[in-house]
Image (cartoon, rainbow, N blue to C red; front, side, top):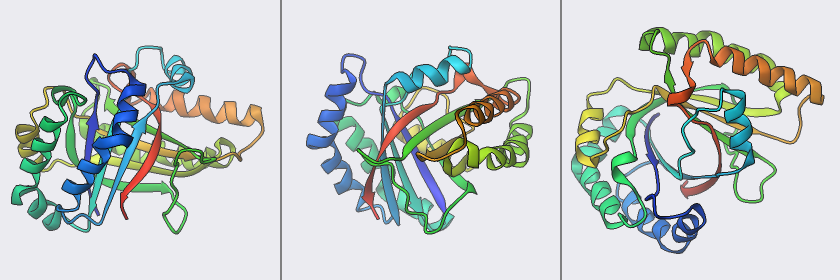
Length: 254
């Protein structure tokens, strides 16, 4: 599978509540019309939540993280050829036109996008967990930048080979029921994506996505697992250039 990740910030004059209301009232329908023409196997929206949980996670990581994103749109294709065909066959232009039409809500210049590959680390089957509104599941979205004293290659290797196993080790105590690393691809299409969509902000090394359930270990065990995760993240993540937030998932194409 290959994924297209599109992270959106709302316009500064629009508050979070108004943006989410607009998404449900009208924006989502327009997105569905465009996405249905891109031939993707699956599409998902994640509505970012600005709440106390972000404040807690940010504080644990030094208090300087970027504010949460307001919307993430994620697309899946079976392979590279299908993704390239969809995006170069007018797909990028349709996406750019849609974002332009929704410019009263979406800040295109501060909304990065890229192609990525997923690496499941804690993964139930079937892969059908959805942290919808009212679900007992919490979905955490963690777009991250690597530390600048490390190379991108070294950071990716550490994320995959060291951090991933540590999260798996602590997953039973943490209440993690699914954990996926989504690494940005070094793909020639990313330059075309940036040019077509017109964003003026850096892309990320990738993102982690975590689904947490009501289970887990004792309160002390959960605290220890959280502390171990944060201490290990600091070995390769630039927290001030990253963010970590809860999101509500909405299936667009299944």
